[in-house]
Length: 271
Image 1 (spheres, rainbow, N blue to C red):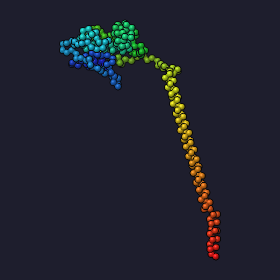
Image 2 (image 1 turned 135 degrees about the vertical axis):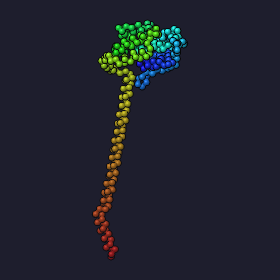
Image 3 (image 1 turned 45 degrees about the horizontal axis):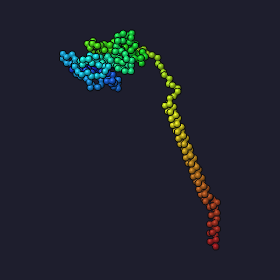
Image 4 (image 1 turned 120 degrees about the vertical axis):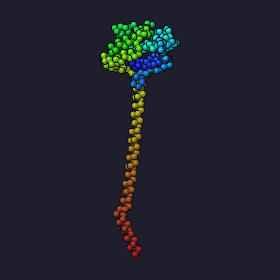
């Protein structure tokens, strides 16, 4: 909120001020470093100049955020933006929306329900966002609540300027009195839902299919190795057979018989 407050202060502090006219939570954007940026200047209007105290214009904006004097008279000033800023502060404190038709009748308009309790610090616990579970600076919450009460004043002159709002909010960021509650770990339910059962069943089937594929791959690899070994054994056997055949052809005994036959033939030819 400090960044958004600085943005409004910049618009109001120019030589020719600009009134945002539609300040609300949905028009505050955050960059990658979570710094607030104002967006959607479609309803922005030049503020009063010289001796003029206000700008008369057609009433436009978002119900629940617009200042009451602006709705009733169409008179627009920089304090109209301050009122809208107070509504957003109240949304942060309570965790509720400015307008909520789902709430009980007395609580549908956030400002009407919560503003009376902002004056009493002892009643602040009644409107604090229960989702915070007490994990916030007590003094900081009191300071912000008091600031929101001033911003939501029905008298525009009683509202602070945006520069003063920035000066009040910046020290709140430095407060260290934030109680640290115990760490709570929520154990997930042991009973899976249907989606979990289907997911587990699918995972089991996928694992079984993968196992079957691996088993087939291993079997095929074994068969390939056996075929390769058999081929190697047959090739070795043929090689040995050739070696044995060659050895018998060129054995000493064969050469001896061949030599004897040759000598006998020569003797017969000599006669």
